[in-house]
Amino acid sequence: MKKFFNTTCYVSLLAMVLTFSACQEEFEELPTGDEQETIMASSSTAKLIERTSSKDGSYDNIIDEASCFAVQFPYTVNVNGVEVNIDSLEDLEVVEEIFDEVDIDDDILEILFPITITLADFTEIVINNKEELRELAEECIEGGDDDDIECIDFVYPITLFTFDINLEQTGNVSVNSDEELRRFFAGLDENDLISIEFPVTLKLYDGTEIVVDSNAELANAIETSKEACDEDDDDDFNDDDFEDGRLDFCLTACPWVVKEVVRDEVNQTDQYFEYVMNFFESGEVVVKDRMGNNIEGTWSTRATDNGPLLKLEFDVLVDFTLEWFVYEIEDHKIKLYAEGGNKIIMKQICVDDETGPDTLRAVLNECVWVIKKVKNQGEEIDRLLGYEFKFMPEGVVTLSNEETTSEGTWEITSSEEGRLVMAITMGDEPGVSFEWPLTDLRDDRLKFEVEDIDYELILQRVCEDNADDGDVLEIRNVMMDGEWIVALHQDGDDNDTADFAAYTFAFGAEHMITATLGETGPSSPGLWRVLRNSDGKLKVYLNLGDQNPLGELTDDWDFVSINEGRVELKDISGDDTITTLVFEKKQ
Image 1: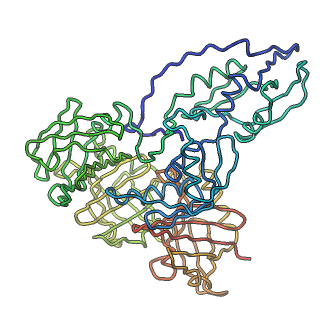
Image 2 (image 1 turned 45 degrees about the vertical axis):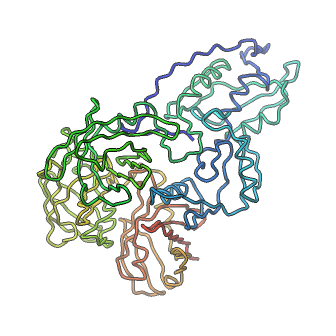
Image 3 (image 1 turned 120 degrees about the vertical axis):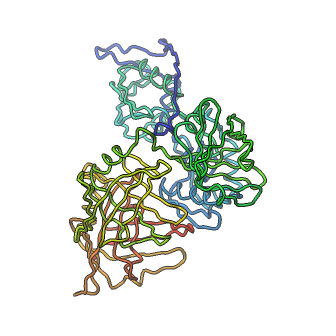
């Protein structure tokens, strides 16, 4: 499983130079004019090709704790008492989200057997119980020393030729995947001779492509690149694989805001909520309390076999003075833990001097901003889901659901603490009229939040209606073709499909959806959108108001699959309840 990060703070900087001298005696020149070369199926170059085309089994280590095989989709697991159907890579993230709900616990995952696993050579084995799975897992080589090469991949198709001992060509085959290439080599004897039709293109872990024109160049490209990324071939899925210096860099990149503190099993969050912690490269850490007072201390980090540790020392802040295990660090969030019931959770606020009011104004002026969430005093305002803001340079803002448009004003100011604030005034839509403090600014996502009174606004940038995203366009086109019915609405253990049996749904242009009761009506208009969010996930927004039963469909659904007149969506609620929604085309 190749792991790398796309934001400055979370990039692991690799600087390694590997040298390689190709063994020329393993290549035999063919007596033809096309300058092809043969290699033996047992040669070092052939083995490099096999390793590069091996099945990577580390992406589901959270399930099987083994990197040398993967469990075939679909299957079912029970995670801390919640049953989860694993149909795709996205569902593995659901498992980690459930694990992360409680940081100080013993996570329990049970696989519902039988399952089928796929080995590195694409052999499939049926596993009937936990004991059989553990026995195979014990044979895996963890920690990155296994045979598969993951930092470089072949770009298909590739054509290969076979030869007899007289170097006469006996056949050829075109392979279109790692599985086909690996199975081709599996069918060879160790002394068989083969050649490859060049040029061949390879893709590095970061998307860079390399074109090679000979066996020597191919072997050199693989050998040089095989350790150029972190394959994450270990069974500790939640380790975040810190490298030396990366944790220090992340800590010092931007200030951190305290969100939760537990010391000696006593919740101290109210005392320290929204304290701001600034780490400096000198080893000094300065904490600013809510009154603006500065509290100075020191910090240091060290690596252990169990993960990185962060040591904080203060004369005054005794609740922070401890050596903390860095349980998790992700985009703009860090979780610290120590034995005895101690925990700190902080969020990073990367709104520095360079990100001033003018920068935020410029960001808001770009494209439209779609509402993902609005909370007003703890109450989520579902009726505004999918509405879009347009922020005009002259201080005018509009809010539209494509059918009606409200107009108001907006401005960017700074709070007494120096945080950017977006003030919106919209008389006929009080749900968004507020002075919203900025807590997270990204190129395509904005979050405004006041946690102590439970106000929250999350906006997703949408440019040109995602017209350049082929997946988004495909889903839209399929859903706009004909009428649909709800074939399944499963909310945890409750099957509510019958509540929607009388409705027919038509997904129209301009993000309009109509739900018609019976054959002739009445019809209820609504809003729908398909977009790719800031995390790269495909989402389907449905807004059919807040009156049941149609209100049960109002949500920002995760897209699961679409095929043969069937669209599957899902949602995971705050209590980890999984809701599945399936539309099928009306016959």
